[in-house]
Image 1 (cartoon, rainbow, N blue to C red):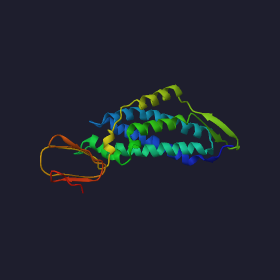
Image 2: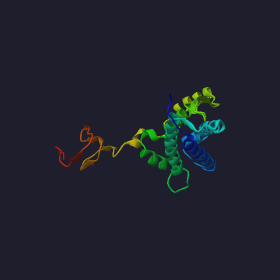
Image 3: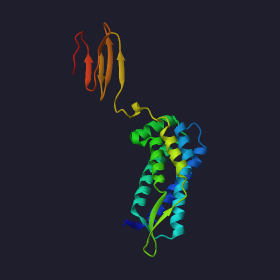
Image 4: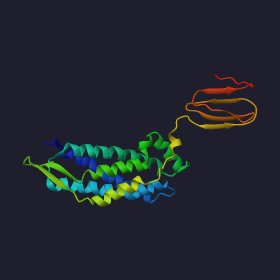
Length: 225
């Protein structure tokens, strides 16, 4: 037997996401110079909103006091990803002195690669896909399977489309303290930092490659510290 929980909390989360999605879509329409991935995401958000709205309507129309616990877990995952995605929109949408793309890179770096717009969109769509049918517990304490009107083929195509989006963030954005340095000519060469990769050209095109640590050269023989 499935485990059931009160439906009120699930409905509340659905309503919050639906409302906030519409706010973001409206704000995006008026914003110029957005990174294109935000335009792509905005065009797909109504699909998620429509599915959540259909699930909410189904619960309300059936007067179900309880719904299976797995649905709350799905909605919780969707809400978690939505809050991250909305946070990215909130960082990028306002006008400001800094470049919107730079703001996106800085914001997504705190989330890691799983926080890229396209990754969050895909996970939200996959969560919505799981809402196609679920169990409710009726007032008479009977389990009942309900279905909502999801065009499964269209949703699957949308997920495939999002999977094919070009990565919105270069991998080097996520590198911590890393850089590449090329030095030629005489004089002192000093490099410090984490995950340092160096290609130092001196004298007769001699190369010194390092990964991490510090390097100092002030004599023909060099000295490592």
